[in-house]
Image 1 (tube, rainbow over the protein chains, first blue to last red):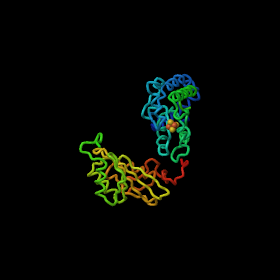
Image 2: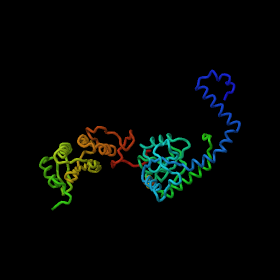
Image 3: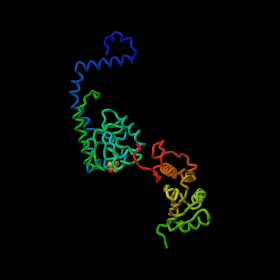
Image 4: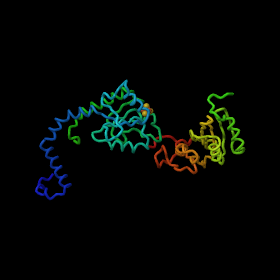
Length: 187
Length: 160
Ligand code: SF4
């Protein structure tokens, strides 16, 4: 921030002015403690809201996807816990990787992850997504999703039952509660 | 024997086998024929003529599957075609033997579009070249893979 530039503000181009004033506001909020105060106030509300809308991406890869389907059926009804599947990565919070990831799929999965808006979480479901599982020796299976995207929660099993999947989401809820991201998500 | 569900005007596998044996006396060997199945060994040169004959005159409309077999000790490769006729309710299994050091066979994709990905996968996994295929590229393995994983001399193990 350079407040000394203030007299020149009238002479700035619009993009220059925007970046300068944005920076000024940011630093002002930070050093006066306003940012912290706002975060302290909004974080419980935000984390409550995020927790209740852990919308996973509807992207079934392999057999574990059947458990995902079973979990959203009437018997387990994961929708009551906010797990409503959306088909566009722009509208989702959670990337639920359920199945083996082949070398051909890897760049596309990475792109899906990057297309998701922050805050975002990744859940690795099943042995394949965790470590390659039954395909530990395969020529074409990536040995674990965490080799190319950060994973928050691991759900072991081959396949994990729907209860286990819901339990994984509950773990994620705990994590979200603990992280307490406020309005300023980036720090 | 009266065949259950014989399509009206349809022919049984035995009748079709006779027809094919008459038309291609040298290059095609019928190994077995039942009322709804037909098994034949086909010489590489006769594959496309036989297939076009089957398509145009014997009502075979559909390629169910194309796959490969690697015979390491016999030093040969086989391509197995399953071609189905809905009109006759008969599935024909054609087997073509190829030398292992030069596995090349004519593509049947120009006849049946459904063979396209099957042949592509067979190439991807076995390295069998289908001459005349419109797009012989990697299908399940990422582009740039240099091995053919379904060959018997392929050493399995991590590569990614
Ligand atoms: S962990 Fe088991 S059930 Fe899940 S995708 Fe892998 S093989 Fe299928």
